[in-house]
Structure formats: structure tokens, C-alpha cells
Image (cartoon, rainbow over all chains, first blue to last red; front, side):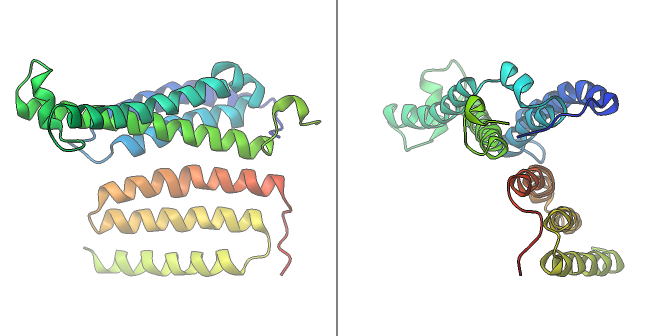
Length: 152
Length: 81
């Protein structure tokens, strides 16, 4: 149960801040192997932008943007990306998550394939963490009940 | 490593930790726990572990505080003991 207040400062600030937060999260995700940050931090910031929208605009408005079903699909895709790359390396004859073997199917050198492989993994981690964070917040704020049965 | 800054940060961290345990109002305890996370983040950054500090700032001071506030919102605000 999130009670929404018609506060124009908070709403305008959220409307301005949320896209920049998401762009910065994508920056942190994409530069994870050069600078501090990575999949986990980028995913937490993506989730935090959705949580900020729940706080400012209420749960119903946010559920129209990102429903619980879409959220579940998102983190399942993230997990599938992570384990899929690992199993793909296994199928190409290397160890689990041995990105060097990706050079056999991608038109790049082995060093470039390792860099690309870690980017795939970080993207999977970011999607998974974002989905779990948003799903946790939905569940805590509704008390685990679906919105229709909440009886507010 | 700057010794006076280090001592100040450690003192504030310990004060926040003791206050978060001792206080009876759970919402205040959550906010003080967020401040504790932030001081831990500054300590990590000051010791050179920027990646850990980033994670602490995101999870400890940001999302964790929001989760705790939502949990306090669904339960009672005063502690029993």
C-alpha cells in the first residue's frame, strides 16, 4: 500500500531524474570492465529508478509501465542470458563461462571475444538484479497480495 | 589514507551503529542505518575500494533503506522491547 500525495515538486523531480538515472545505469553497466561499477550496480540503479517511480506516482501507474509479468520475463531473460552464454562456451569445447571459445562463432579475435563475453554476462546480471529488486519492492509494498484483493 | 578523516569516519560509523540498535522508533532506526551505510561507503572509498563503495552506496544506503521503510510501513512503528 503506497499512499500517493499530489506533490508537484516530487513528481516533477522524478519525471526529470528517472531517465537520467537509467542512462547513468546503462553507462555504469557498459563501462563495468574499465571503471568501478558493473552489472550488479547498474541493475540496482535501474531497479531504483522504477522504485522511485512507485514512490512518486503510486503503484498503479508504475504497474502500467512495468507489469509484474513483464518484470518476471525480464529477470528470467537475464538469468537465461547468463547461463546461456556459459552453456554455449561449454558446448564449444571450453569450460563453463570460458569466453575465449566464443571467438569460434563470432567474427572477432579471442581477446575481443573475452571482452564481449563479460559484457553479455554483465547485461544478464543487470537484468536479473533489476527484475528481482522491482519484484521485491512490489511484493513488500502490496504485502504479497495482488492489487485487487488488497482491500484498501 | 588520511588519518584524521579516517578517525572521524570510524567514530561516526560507531555512533550510528549504536544509535540504530538502541533507538525505539523503527523508522528512525532505518534512517540511521542508512546513514551508517553511507559512512561505511565513505570508509570504503577512502581505503581505495571504489567498487565496494559503489555497491554499498547503491544497495545499503539506497535500495535497502527503501525496502526497510516499506517493511516498517506494513508492520508496527514502535519496537516492543
